[in-house]
Image (tube, rainbow, N blue to C red; front, side):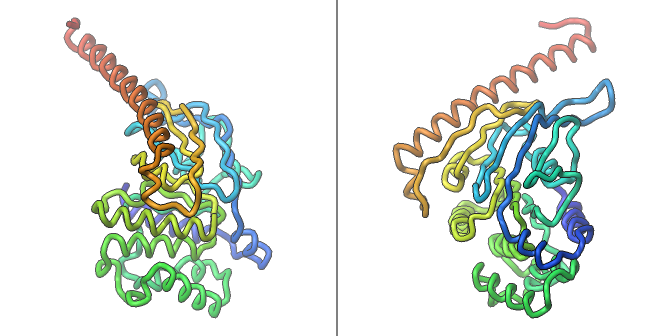
Length: 306
């Protein structure tokens, strides 16, 4: 994804949200119920339109971390954009606490694959940008909450640094703090640790895990890493090949608080084996489909096949 495009999206979502009353602020600090009902979405011109998501239904309960995994290119980021309100489904509907999603809103916050911090703002200014722009929090409350979050994510000493002066892991922590500063009812994470080195990724997984277990905010977490999904999630939703649907849902019955040692348990191994088995079948189906498409294209061009 283009980080500048993502930045504009976040800025636009914050700017379009109306100032909240005290009641709305309390509402925003809660936990959301998310429902996808028969959602379908395609792209392209008529006649060449490709369906990416097909009749997908899913319910996420308040305080639950749901991980989405699926074959590469199956439509995970499309689902993120639909739930965030950046795209609208062709069929079906998406509800947040019973309210139909018709666009971006301050009840949702997305952390993208690539950093979307404003490069011209310091760490602290990035974290406080949303509520300052909306004007829905008193200045003293913004300062106090920013201080709390900076300490919580271990960035107090870097509060006046610019994004270019931060490591990849620090940028991820700053983005988590910025998301929490906006008090969303739903956190949407689109492969947020992708591109980090192996050690930093593990540290960020553990860091994020502690934050989630502390506040239990409803979370939709997209990842291509099975072990990451098992470590973090209450449920792992395995998506099919394109057009994507729900192939299987695994209930992850591992105790909290969690740590990396649990991934060595027999139960975690069973979850991983089942998930990999389903993903392997879906990947094979995708390759088989691609092969037929190539055969058909070859026949149209040269009038023959092997």
